[in-house]
Length: 212
Image (cartoon, rainbow, N blue to C red; front, side, top):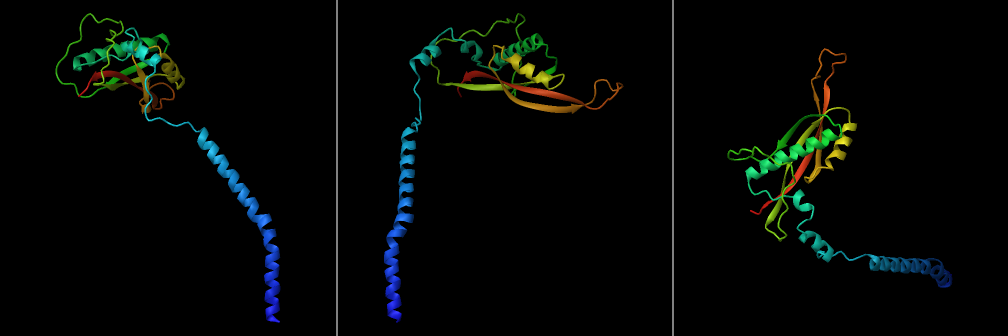
């Protein structure tokens, strides 16, 4: 009797096997095959990222152009004296651009590395752009920078006016930070003499220097 039940059970398994294969295994296999095809197609459509993109002829012509605008925006600063002249020009350019936009500035502060030696700025300081550099490759030059902090008066909207103004500056500037400070009110006797909020915009000026 027991042997008969086992044979009947095995027979049922043999009869049900094609059904299981057709309803479960074959659909799963098809889905897996379609997924592999999609992955292969996506891999073929993905562009290969090259570790180095060579300079095109158009880019080379722009870099070699002796009249390219970037040559006056990214000057070569060889020593501390030239860097002080650069700071003087950038401060004047930023101040003029902000004044033209009606942005009120409380003060400016330059954050520099320690400067050794005594330098005197020339009396007749030209307001023209830096002279353009010769069209020669100089891989030994390095990009360096310093930060100019500008304290701006007024509400937060003045910051957006200041950011729009610095775009007009010839020197190569990029926003590097923003800081809010709370200081004593300028008119303590006025109504609501609560601490006054001060907003400081940090601008990084980039330039070239001889390689070390």
